[in-house]
Length: 263
Image 1 (cartoon, rainbow, N blue to C red):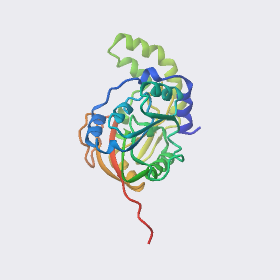
Image 2 (image 1 turned 45 degrees about the horizontal axis):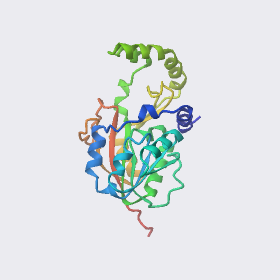
Image 3 (image 1 turned 135 degrees about the vertical axis):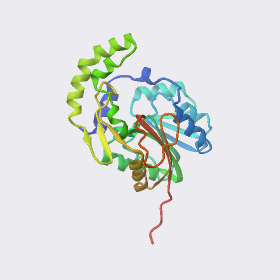
Image 4 (image 1 turned 30 degrees about the horizontal axis):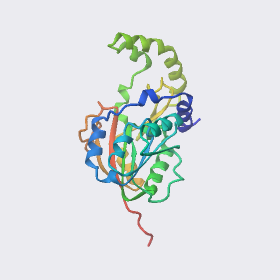
C-alpha cells in the first residue's frame, strides 16, 4: 500500500472534525497570508482544507475560493460553517479535474503534501504548476528533515508529558502506538534529499515526507516554480543553507514560472 492509499484509509476511518475545527493560524501562516493578501482576492484553491481553519480567512479576501478535502465529514462541516464558500470532496493526488491555468493561488498548509511519497510529490508539484496561472502563487508547508532526530518514539510521548492527564492518556495509547510503529516503521526511507518517516501523527499509523529548505527549493525549481521565501515555525526567514532543526515543519511561498513556448 502506497503512502497516499494508507493516508486515505486513515482519514476515511472516522470523523476528525472535532480535532481540526479551529480558526487558529500559526505565525508563519498568518505572515504569508498577510504578505500575499492581494493575490488571495483571485481564484484560490485550498488542498486539504480540513475543517476550514484557513479557508475562512481566504474567503474574507473576497476571492473565488474552493476548498478540497478527502474527508466527506470535513467537507460537510465546512459547507455548513462557511456557506458562502465552495467545498468538494477530492484527493490532492488527483488534480485532473482542474483546467490548465485555472487558479491564481494554491494553498496546501498543515503539511498535506507530506502524505505523498517522492514520486507522487514531484508529479503533484508538476500538476500544481499546470493548474496555476503564470506567476500563480503556491503556499504550503512541509515536514523538516533536519528535525528528524527530534521526532519522538511512542514511549517518549509518555515520559515527556508534563500534564498528568495527558501522560495517562498517552500511557493508555502506548500499546497501540508501539504496534503501529513496529509495523509502519519498517517502511521508513532515508535518502539524501528526503525521508519517509513514521512519526506520531494519528498514533504512528502513517508515513510522512520530510525535506529540507534547500532540497525543497531544488524540487520546486524542477517543477517550474521559483522559491520566494521559506519561514520557520516562528515566522522567521530560513535562508539558504540553514536547516532550522528546531522546527518540525517549514513554510514556503513560490511562484509558478511561465511555461516557455518551444523554439
